[in-house]
Length: 338
Ligand code: HEM
Ligand SMILES: *[C@@H]1O[C@H](CO)[C@@H](O)[C@H](O)[C@H]1NC(C)=O
Image 1 (cartoon, rainbow, N blue to C red):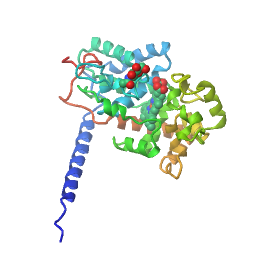
Image 2: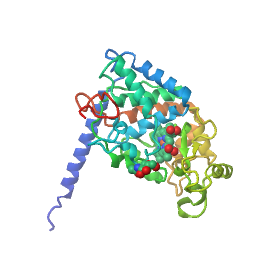
Image 3: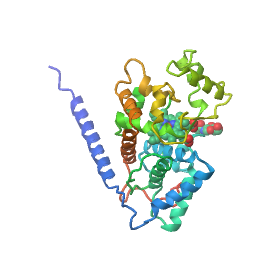
Image 4: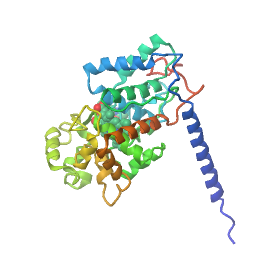
């Protein structure tokens, strides 16, 4: 008889470790609280809101840019403000990774919020919490739902360039996208709801150009792209290289309003990114678990708003640093000891 394989024991050990890590992560998220700064910095919310209101008059797109920052922060090393760190002796900035380079924006507004909070309550409010608050305030100001932001995250002291490079990409297949969300504890409903953030903001031609003329190397446009919308996009994005950075509304119907028209667009084959449309239109039944959610959110904005708020809180709970872990950065761009 063959000797018992050591594999099951090793597998069990790995499973136990993963379960312990999940428990730890859950326990850390439970330490977050909406009341965290009630005594130490009571006007934190109003301060964030005031700075964003001011920024918005000069740049209406800033609301969208700030919402996106929380996604790109939390998916990389958890919600620890790592995205905000600039290049330094020990920092390979996530800002230069492909999904962020010449794309992620809003950092000067985060700096302004930080400066206002440092003058009101020095050394108290973390950059990771500023990102979470800024996302909520931005959604609200754009007409979307309100939720009580959990607070008490601390800032990381490292960046993770490779993980930032591996953020969900518009050309990932639906299953890869779903897996990247599942990996951080977000289910299909969260995934479909969070992509609804594309109801505001802009995307550069380079992120969807291949859908217009050479979809997946076929030499044809993406068959799941509405004809009239395709023509309009070809006007805006004439050819690869010609207008790579030109901006297009992610929601052509109501570009700056946080509403559920994004899901109506998908039902009409008017999702801008491939990663938007696949939730409804991925071939071979791949969209079986996401298409019904798209339809539900198109039918009910209230349902979308509830699920979006829930999913943003869940995303904000990804591996926070709490207690004496990490630090509260004085400047969001650099770790304190440097
Ligand atoms: C399937 C996952 C996702 C992919 C592949 C994706 C991809 C993209 C891309 C390519 C852009 C355009 C960037 C540019 O042109 O510079 C974009 C913009 C944006 N994304 Fe996503 N995204 C995803 C999920 C999310 C999530 C979860 C959120 C927030 C909860 C979000 C919020 C935004 C916002 C608000 C914008 C507009 C930003 C602006 O105008 O500055 N995205 N996304
Ligand atoms: C980021 O973009 C700049 C300007 O387009 C480019 O020169 C640089 O190589 C890019 N960085 C990385 C890491 O790809």
